[in-house]
Image (cartoon, rainbow, N blue to C red; front, side, top):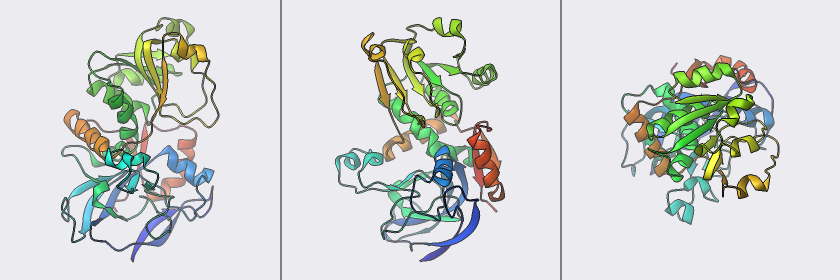
Amino acid sequence: MRTTQGWAVSEPGAAVRPWNFVRRDVGNRDVAVRIHYCGICGSDLHAARGGDTTAFPLVPGHEIVGEIAEVGPGVSRFTVGDPVAVGNIVGSCGNCTACRTGRENWCAQVRLTYGGPDESGNTTQGGYSSEYVLDEHFVYRLPDGLDPAGVAPLMCAGVTTYSPLRRSGVGKGTVMGVIGLGGLGHVGLKLGRALGAEVSVFTTSPGKAESALALGADDAIVSTDAAQMAAQANRFDFILDTVGAPHELGPYFDTLGIDGTLCMVGIPDETMRVDPMNLIVGAKRLAGSGSGGVPETQEMLDLCAEHGITADVEMVTPDYLDEAFDRLARNDVRHRFVLDLTN
């Protein structure tokens, strides 16, 4: 076993504190990743303060960028010193339909980067730490030419928004909407544009409408403005809903054209109601998506490398983690926090 320095919460809602723990030794197909940056995701906040896992102490973090520090004897894809990235999946059964079709994120035995069982039955600990040990299958080469800190959030926000765009055939000729311009929404906007779609952003804030246009949106719609929303009737082929707070879906269904799809990737903390007529009239669809498998994650990184896409980030150090969680809880970040572990 190898000692690792991490930053953990001892119980739900506790302050983040340094904590030394052990990781497994590097096995035959394992690599050890020395962590340089780790994105701070909304799911980290929920796990640390909401207690949706029963295993504490808990080290959050599943948006990892670093370099290979050690390789096992059976590793074929990496050598020491390679710049790499790791996302929210670090293991799966490898044999089920989901794994065989490259959708490891839906494997019934998927192993998450933190808060789940590892091979020994202990709890996986995440990327707010100095090092991570995992199977090389779930490690990705860091694209050349991209800011590594800006790549970190792509390992969650990037693949979470890319996967539904890819599976829905979003591309040239698609009229796409994005609800919300937060950590997920601003990446979804960039990816939609890279795929060739015409992309508009729905926001409740006129200030964020200006930000959306600055990020490359073709249009920005203030969703609290009834006249602006009425002008969008039947316009969109696909809408990506990234909002994590309860909101009414009906007004957005009104903006979809025939056979249009509204896909939810944000996770509101309350049950939401849908009027069946919103789906029946116009044969519209309500879908959901979350994360992605290994092939989709690699495709997303390749697309981002081709188009120079990274997340817009604010860098923080470990001593700022509690304040970062506080600000994330009140949505006071444009657009993602990234933890700097280079020192």
